[in-house]
Image (cartoon, rainbow, N blue to C red; front, top):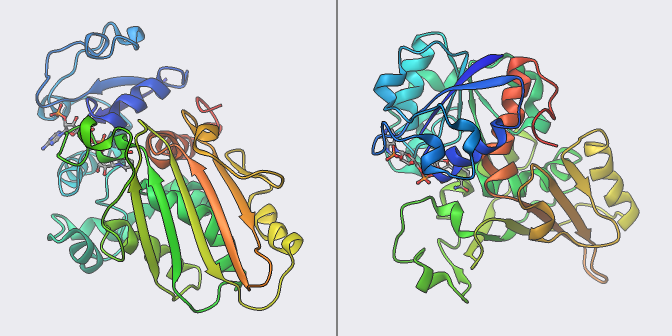
Amino acid sequence: MKRIGIIGAAGYTGEELLKILSKHNGVQVAFATSERRGGVGVAQLFPHLPMYNDLKLCTADEALGRDVELVFTCLHAGESVKWAKKFLDRGVRVIDLGSDFRFKTPAAYDEWYNMRHPHPELLCDAVYGLTEWYRDDVREAKVVGNPGCYPTSVLLPLLPFLRAGLVADAPIIVDAKSGVSGAGKKPGETTHFVSVNENLSPYKVGRVHRHVGEMEKEMRAFGGGMNIVFSPHLTPLTRGMLSTIYFQLAGQKSRDELFAVVDDAYANEPFVHILRDRLPNMKMAQNSNFCFIGLVKPAGVNQVILFSAIDNLGKGASAQAVQNMNCMLGFEETKGLL
Ligand SMILES: NC(=O)c1ccc[n+]([C@@H]2O[C@H](COP(=O)([O-])OP(=O)(O)OC[C@H]3O[C@@H](n4cnc5c(N)ncnc54)[C@H](OP(=O)(O)O)[C@@H]3O)[C@@H](O)[C@H]2O)c1
């Protein structure tokens, strides 16, 4: 049994990690932290997780001395890295579900997060945890920046076409919908039940959402210099994410040739499924680590429309983090996830 810890276990992604890891027979959760709920039993806070009957939440400070191989940090921007640094200094490997290790340069982080990175010296060692594209690096990584939910849902369908040089040099339009848990546990005016229920709201439209920088950074790594125009929406759902991506095709390709590009990229991937005869929807991916991808080539225009469905808390956060943990600790990549 490998011992792991969770910093920020009382939030949505922390709770999801506890749930997934309770079914993973290769690891033991040695600590789970909460600043506000230190001393409370995990099973008391989350009655659907009675298997943690013996585990009490502790503060992150109390957790520091504990003997673990790997820690998940599930905190907001600027907070995760502070704890990650303390564990890395003790030789513990880290997977950050937040955004503190997704950029390679402090300048990019400062630009998109509008704050100075507290430990820029750690960025050069960080590996971007989009497992299907970086698994060799993830295996060896000391610290992994788990991708954002929107970037996961956009990059998985798009990267095969960028790598193949099939995306024309024109802005890529992304229209995406997320369940409300994507906004975290702290309620705000726009995430309040009354605002969200029976409603559908665009927010941070254009090129202002922080995930635009993360998506474009990865697009550049695969040869795409174009920009993203991004319209995220809040849907009246607890969890789930559906992204629709429009790009202009470079050259001429048939529908079958386009499918061959994604089929080739993901032929041996257990968590990425290409749908040929139907389009993805949110429910397909809920409570899973799957990404379902669909493709339409509309008649009369040299355009491609990609669709992808994931669970923002699954492949978009905690389940992908466990997939990365499996790579890092030498487990079967699907362990605890199928
Ligand atoms: N929600 C999603 O779908 C999703 C998807 C991908 C990535 N993410 C990212 O994952 C991270 C966590 O998201 P979340 O949705 O789980 O957030 P959340 O539900 O708001 O939970 C965050 C947790 O952080 C703890 N916390 C806050 N400040 C802290 C500090 N200074 N020291 C220690 N703990 C602190 C809080 O718990 P206590 O007060 O109990 O300690 C809270 O439980 C964020 O960076 C988010 O952007 C979220």
